[in-house]
Image (cartoon, rainbow, N blue to C red; front, side, top):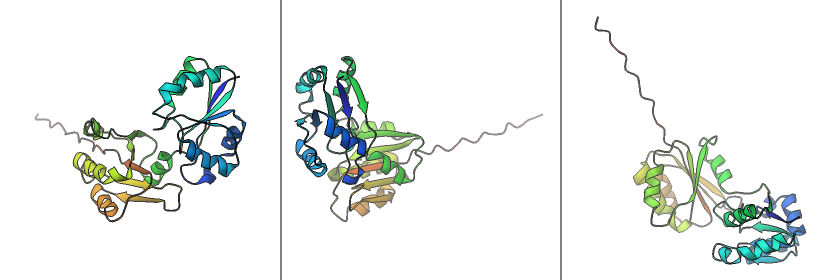
Length: 236
């Protein structure tokens, strides 16, 4: 029976791949990869010879019908991205939607995703949170931050190294300098670090050295102080 299997891959440390993920990557007939070169390095490390096909945001609309035809022929295909879980700020949504439309089985393996360890490391409430991923680079960016200013849940963002300082400035301007922030960088890798503080402290820290690696910014939700009820005085 045809099946699309969503396979998370390590976000840095190759030891984080699961036994089950390795077995799936060995057994399927084809692996759809965001970057075949990066996935090729992972497969080489795991001694896996499965055929690769490039599948990314620039070609997914062009080749989606071709993939659906392959799946309808009765084969199993795995979908991976460069790091983490497909569909989380990475290609995945379109092919999953098309598989559902075509009654093709979908199986999603649990595994690595950068925002979960960043959320836990932040020390902010994690029972309820809001995942925003990457904000628009230009149009709509400030508008979305203004909408999120009053969000009471912990908010998680992905950000690129070269935009981190600007992002912290925007948080300072819109959320205020008292809002607590946690920035995690290079998660699971040798130079992993999580720095906590307000926007001013974090901007000062990251301005002193080159910023490299994947960035996850976690912002504490707005604390709305309860309104004190005024006692009604009896004039009688």
